[in-house]
Length: 397
Image (tube, rainbow, N blue to C red):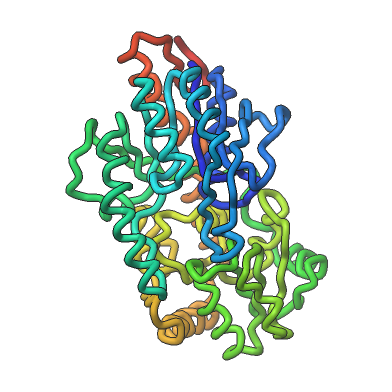
């Protein structure tokens, strides 16, 4: 099977969607699928030893992200030629999210060249404080995302929240829900109090006292203004930020703020294990991969109320907090109440182990890949192409 994967960026960009695409590509390659991955050339593509198949960078400009913090690369004319050629070489096209221009171009090429499309929808509506951006998001979802979803041969939603947002659409085939996976061999609970103190020393964090963790891009959408308000209001709490972006917490000049850059995958594990609470005051996220990673490490987590209901299996392990994108102070006050409640009675080691075990059982990558492979099998079979399936981790014809 020749599979073409389309994303806005490669996983070196360190966003959740791109990391998910990379993990699925590895699963597919291990099952004998010939994978080609197209994304903007703003960051490097994977090399052969990464096991993601063949990367084809698309010439694009990333000026929107540099200026506004929105990950929205715009393909250049040369990229459209490569898109047309690579779609022609593929048997099935898998697109991760519907609003990115590179994926819109891939969908159009797939329609013209009669290639079936699996559209994986990660997010629904993303609210912003800026009214113009909110209006633009609503219009784009109404005119573009819904058209893309209606036309795809198969739609996959990664969370209940995203599926609910697009409820009422008429699809070509009944959509399915497949939560993203997590690397269960990598993201696991730590080794106890002594190990935590050692990790904190190595990370430059205080060995005692509460430490709160945020992982993600430093942009408004992720709730960075809320976290700044909290960091200023709680000088005795320490905040660890792992990420990058224009709203850099280092610029706040606060002694209780610690920033870690260029961390992903294994280099994040120590942070998850060493901290007391994961805080993600964003909304419109679907099911964030960083939240799954935190839970896989047994880390108590606070997130937006809509994120907490993204998957029924999440609700007993996370605390949902009301988020008002237009009012960072009100959101910060709501998170402050939740933070005080958790830190007053922190979960015991048994709770952390049970949380991690439940996350590992629910979100292992092999079972997510198996569900996708069943879809790919069906689409290829409908075109009379050879199929590749996954049964108990073994390939079959």
